[in-house]
Image (cartoon, rainbow over all chains, first blue to last red):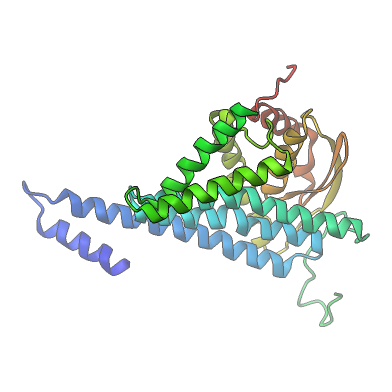
Length: 140
Length: 163
């Protein structure tokens, strides 16, 4: 994708002047926009993964997982929609996004509710990450 | 009943045609008709033909609500990602009970799902008039923030709010 962007930019540069090829520039902009969107999505997926690994207990980890479900997945879908352009595929991707917005909180709530009913006590109050330099052993 | 089945048939026809994209293949059109008939039969047998299962006339309001909700989701995502990626990982998990302000069942469902969808807050338990919410940061558990979401989710499915 980066290569195609560079090619598009090169085409646009070589044809600068009165006969500027706008379609190539637009294609480049489209690639740029979708790459940016997918990069943002990946950033939030990374954040969600880090959160699941770092946070202390079950309930707090749910929040991090929710981040992957919402902005992570939706921004990646937005990038794909920009790539697909005006086609039936766009509509399908929009529907996928909509279904994701409906189903992912349902699943999260089911898991949280099950944990609550089973009597899992949430960790409350302030929490700080243990200082890795202070002691070698970790309480998990 | 007739009105709801009519709306449902229209919506399902539009759905099938937009997803398949073929208008000239008799095989696919027949399969679509069979599927729609099957869905209608199932819905009829389950006796769930009512406002809650066929809320298509409220779509514009719901779309407006989705736009607002997406803005909130982006804000909450940024807050949570900041908390998770900071070296100290300072979080302050809190459990709060907030009033479930929408009156109808579907309004409460939309409200609770919106809470869960916003990162940093998860609805853990839903009672008749209260929702137990687990928040990642204490400042996310202020009742004022939930009040607006509750009113908006009630309005998004066409519920009248007193204010």
